[in-house]
Amino acid sequence: MTTATTTATAVARINGVALHAPGQTLPPDELRQRACTELLRQAAQAAGLLAAGDIAAEDGVISEAASGAIEAQLENNLAVPEPSTEDCGRHYAAHQGRYRTGERVRVRHILFAVTPGVDVVALRKQAEPVFLDVRCHDGQAADRFADAARQWSNCPSGADGGDLGWLSAEDCAPEFARELFGRIEVGVLPRLVHSRFGLHVVEVLQREAGVAQSLESVHGAVANSLRQQAFVTALKQYLSLLAGQAVVEGVELDAVDTPLVQ
Image (tube, rainbow, N blue to C red; front, side, top):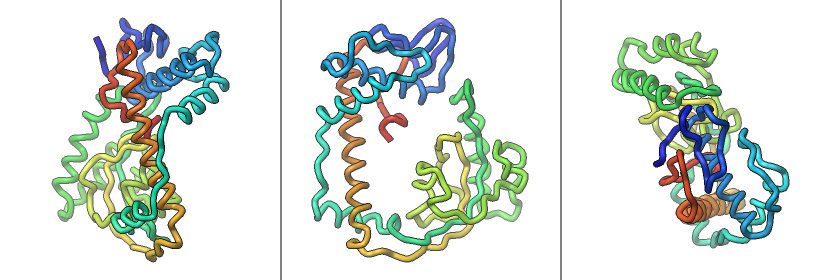
């Protein structure tokens, strides 16, 4: 039997190894991350890269030796091709907005913060009606967004109607920046934005496009982006293989889309 969250009566395990303390409840993303890390730790042990006496901790923190062994295991088992010139050209042509300098957006948001022990499913159920309400009233005279930010946001900006002012990509967490920059949308974004801080309802008020850069000047960044994409794809495939060979209890790993592989 597998579940997306832990309960007081069930401890999630990988091949019998507990991923948390009895009675502890973890957010689904953290539980999946621990499960993926444990799959890799056990694979490193099986490959002789990590001593059999290395024990998984209930707090999810692995040893320094385990961390090094996992890196070696991934290096030995993931095939990450080097992007070709043609690959870089196609990627650049499709994503030129990502490679502008000086791009800025004026943004406001409503943050539903993820804190230790929070029920992420319940948090999403709280966030979605607010998102749908401001999305449906986007552009109307009544400023539903500001009112909702003052009522619901866990960010200090809520007192100002959620206003974050003008932001550049460097001002944001990477996962937040990916949803904001290199795009053309203005208005409430059509989906909740996930970040390390929680769930965000986001409205882009204005955009400044910045200056386009030539492929030659950003070739290194383009190549790195393609390498990262290839690494993530290979890691997901490898984790799926390991999960298929393991006894997995109390955690859903059908889609291993976790912070470990983002």
